[in-house]
Image (cartoon, rainbow, N blue to C red):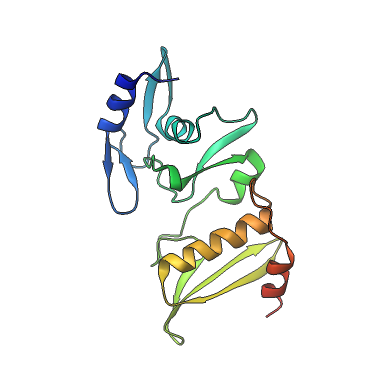
Length: 164
């Protein structure tokens, strides 16, 4: 894969913030690029592959959970099929105050509301005091609902919460 020297060069081009690890050599809202063995590849893909110790499976892509195209933080990246990736094709709207797709502030309850839509049906995940917990719960619920790889949880959990 990459030599130790190339790995050091790769990480030298990254600024680690409390949330995203940003590829410094890419314009705003553009994917980072890095050359490996004479071929230019997505920096986020290389980061994911280094973290997982393998190449992305054929027919899969690396998606940004955070919707920041410059982010290379492995915990913000996931391997998805094209169809699964389309479920997350757009990030939060410009009016979104949380920065997390499907999470908004509920003034009446004084909590973060996590919800999303699947096949025209609104799925209520819950209310949360902590934004990070709301993000984790909505991510988990979407993974179950849309059948993302690596999630072996029963769909009944989601079905029960959507009936409330």
